[in-house]
Length: 312
Image (cartoon, rainbow, N blue to C red; front, side, top):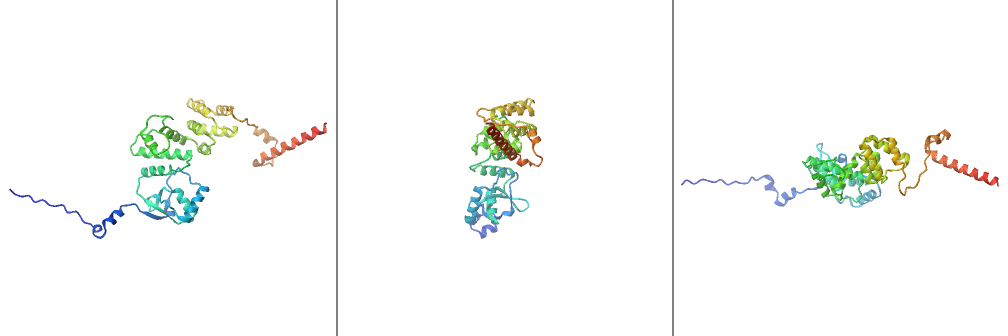
């Protein structure tokens, strides 16, 4: 019987195999911490988390001046040879305040969706997060998961149906699936009302209901809030939403609802602005109107007291 020769597969040896040790080859596969020029690091597009120069930032600046950046930032390379920040915007800003030219970074190749998910997850570890930051970051992550083939519904009701993508987002966040949907609703608010939510002038649940109003209706509401010096309660916001959905909401109805007295509300004085302006001297500037009116009242009250004493 004729014997068949079997050829052995000889592994291909590269120059790298000849001139490096196994330990060095393993080490080359690990991510390295590299000092990257800060001027070469671009901010993440539409980064939803605010970087503010506050007391905490000044403490971070001082720490970096003394010890440098302890935890490296995460960046990804761009096509033009620069880098895009994924995690570390606050460290970058503090480093700039500390007059540093470079900062330690881990460079990682990431797709847009991978970068978005990591950016959101890493920033969600912060102690204090504004409602607007949560709203836009949750929406960005949900859209990134959607691009990866997950089922998503950004227009679902507050309580909503069972959604795969929202459940995935909630796994790595302190908020439930329904709460995440509520936060995403806030992205429908106009910027001026969103700012009031961040400043705690408008409570979270009323803000969710207000997000169902059209843009024009929200601007009407904003004007009425400023005129009445009041914000809608949750019950009032629900009424506003229902009227809007029925196509019956206008500026007069918004004003009527906001002017209603709420429980435990301290009554507020209202004045006709045009009537006051009509009796003011023309040289009184707008910023000085309040002081002028107060002084005029004080002067008039003093005159009444003197008149009363003279009559005795």
